[in-house]
Amino acid sequence: MSRPAVAIALPPDEFAPVSAELSEAGLAPIKIRRPADLETALASRRDIALAIIDGENDVDHSLEMYELLHEGGRDIPVLMVVSHRALDRLVNAPVPASLHDEYVTRPYSAESLRWRVEAMLIRAQTVDDGSGPVIQGGLIEAADWARRATTVVVFNPKGGVGKTTVAVNLGAALQVRRSQRVLLIDGDTVTGHVASSLGLDQTRSVVDNWHDEADDGVSEGLLEIASAHSSGMQVVTLTRSPLHTEVLTPQRVIDALGAVRRSFDFIITDTHPSYGPLNLSLFDHADRILVPVTPDLPALRAAVQFRDVAAELGIQDRISMIVNRANSGVSVADIERTVGIPALAQIRSAGMLFVRAANEGRTVIECFPREKVTEDFDRLADRLLPTARRTATQSRPAVRSLFGRREVPAGA
Ligand SMILES: Nc1ncnc2c1ncn2[C@@H]1O[C@H](COP(=O)(O)OP(=O)(O)OP(=O)(O)O)[C@@H](O)[C@H]1O
Ligand SMILES: [Mg+2]
Image (cartoon, rainbow, N blue to C red; front, side, top):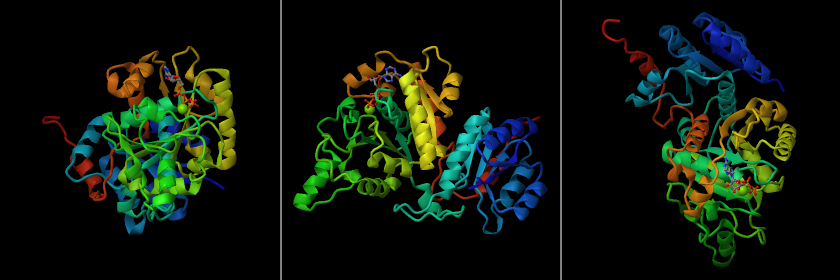
């Protein structure tokens, strides 16, 4: 199936790398110089799924294009490229930002823009997964959409590469440093160690709860089963024992996750390194699948295997690599070339910091806020975060407010 087109209205020096990157991903970039180009493109083709617009240089043109993308019931998501300054104004504006548009700040890399585009395309295609109505083809039921968590699965078929470390600390970075509501799921049904590393060993698992339900008929959702961690994250363990997990059918787990999607901004699931039916279902329902890779041959081979499996499953667009223990001397570019999955972020080796934090039942993010490794997790968190968070009340005039508030210093 051919991939959709993306209208790109960026200055020439940005258009070239961005369009090359999108072409490589199989998308069809369309060069837009002025609103009339966009009007022609929209009139002549039906496959434009997204537009990337410069939100700074020619404000009148940008606004005109924005309106073209939204007139007459059309609702094509826009990725707006702005400066930090403009973004601050947008975020702090009393009229909040538009609904399913997103913002990226300069400077950005063409590759990071591509991943943002991929994530937006996945969302635009989302259909009802049981957690609420989402209409396919761009028209999204606004209020429901705005309240849905981004679902992130952390997976690599090899053990010991840092899946749990990434899941736990990414969750904490989003919760503590980016004020996101995070539900962290220990989905490793064999050797799960999220709860123990967070000092929550005594909590009841989903399996405990669902077994009890068979006896007492009392059914609890994940919100009731979850335990609050000192970081503010809610934490759910699927099971504490690898035995008697028959109640944990993939469909029931997926339904339980779907039911709490509106209560969180992110649901992050740590997994067991296997291709069991639960993991396949989790992949199927994930917005993003993060693949931690350490710079050693077995981990690289495992990631290559997963890349091929992901292609077969048709989920390759969702996978991104996290280079863990990245400061080992092997270049990230080499790892990317070898594995064939773009690196979304790097996490440096942090020696004993993870062990020290786990001994206290806390995360590195909480215990060592000024360490460089915490900044690595900040960067990873930012790459998963829509730059401007949206709420149910947000509407398009906000973009007008972004442009309208463009302040020119006195005397300029
Ligand atoms: N960047 C890092 N710096 C220092 N230590 C790390 C780093 N990443 C992971 N570790 C350590 O490596 C070990 C394995 O990491 P982790 O448990 O996260 O891997 P995993 O992929 O979840 O393993 P499994 O597949 O067995 O669940 C842990 O002791 C963890 O503290
Ligand atoms: Mg683990």
